[in-house]
Length: 315
Image (cartoon, rainbow, N blue to C red; front, side):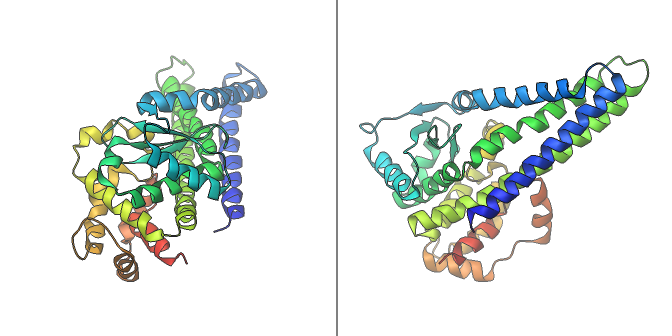
């Protein structure tokens, strides 16, 4: 899974999504005649730029991030430092997210500005090898710079959604407001599908990156299983608290209960972890259901069964 194909897909997605958005602005300008398309295009670019600039602060505030020093958690710093050196990227800042949902995420504007965080919930359920595998996944996001792309792209559906609501409740006497509302909603729906696709692609590449960095792909598979198991038992209200940030997570908390139906078959000795033999045996027999593959189109993360199958194939 070379980075060339990741960057090629990201480039195509970026070009497509901005072309769609610009077409929407041109249509708005043409129908209402209130501005030149180039002016609206500049305004749209400014919105994306502002989101890019303030996104780290938004993530920190939303996820209750507290950065920890080497003196506070030396073992965590040692893992990140070793993985960052192997990935040939600067050591990112390390934070603890004070939420109970077990998960992890990476964010930042550049590789030099990278930040990697694990939640309190994750620290309570994974062993150090599994935590290392999850951190390898997150550092791969930083290495690929894809967290910057997803941050910028996520602004586009937001712009379209705001346009939809503005047109829906506008007082347009010519009757064009309602038509434009439906156009804006269609653009929102289409661009959101593209963003979800981009996020699923980057998750596959981050899984592969973790397998290469740790040389233990089955450990990430075990971590995915553990995270899914514990998240499935959490109240839905708790999971909804982090709904807006799930694209940054290593797994999708909202699909945990459904995913566990198949995943629990992998745990042969019922110890709550997966070893190399269990992962390979599960991968050889398991197959994602057709309905799950169809619903994956609307998901921010790939099907967990497929992720484990791909991890089992890494040599």
